[in-house]
Image (cartoon, rainbow, N blue to C red; front, side, top):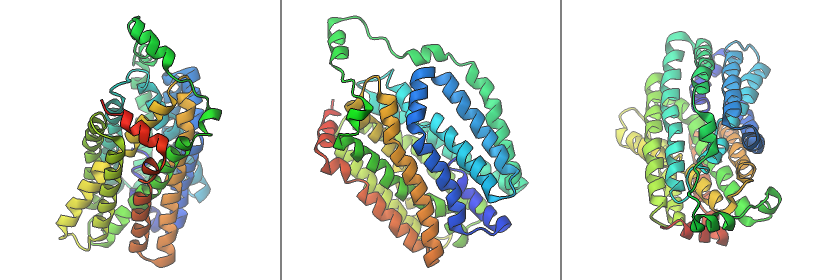
Length: 388
């Protein structure tokens, strides 16, 4: 929710501070860099201290960061609030920690389980886009940041009442000879060993390249629709509706991953996301409902599928005691990609004054991002093993 509501702030920051798109994008880029670089640390902290402490710290940082940004008067204050604090919170409560937790409970149906867990991000996108735009429209962006920040800090109370000791313990397999052999056969790869494997860098490149394409699109989407004549609240609601499609898209993807070759599913999602970007580019007026629907459907149903796809492959290749820090290191690619994509999108727009150039960059990234699972043999083999 915190990351996805950022596009709603772009017009407000431009109006109040007069900052360029690349300057505004640099705030979001810093947030993404912090999230990516601290992913391995989040994995280590999760393995050592457990979910309650890590998630509580993430909530506290998120709420505090929004309070700082809501009272900010200078760019450096935005860097601290939205950049550093929110970036750290996204690492502590994001893909790495959630993937590490869910892999303790599921093995055979892991792709579907990951998809269901990550589908919550879609619900957060829907709430984030719609709620933040409503609050910005009616109370101003500063009050919107403060209200959301206070709500997140209050959410700490709900977090503390959950049975975290039981959740962190994971699933206990029956003590049968077959299960004992399975546990003994599981690899226990170290981070040092993992980074020597092409699959490690292939998965990181998927996160990096598709992060570029996804957030180069999202960063410009609200402003683009407003420029095409859509009211601000309507533009945000469309993106919120797109976010509502992320959960069913991810769950459907997870189900397909348990039935078909993961490489085919991965390639299909990249093509569909690229079609969504093209559809957005073709919207010229509020009357272009066909392209609006196509953008919402293609982009929404596939934008979040890289998380379960990459997480499933990583769990097959790097399962063991070090999975948290390994997957956290892989996720650095995602943080850097999101940072690069949002910044490049703003920079390209500033240089060309053209949304088309930014969307072209995003579309190419989505297509190129689908190549590593096809080109790297170990990923292809791991994809085949996903079949049941």
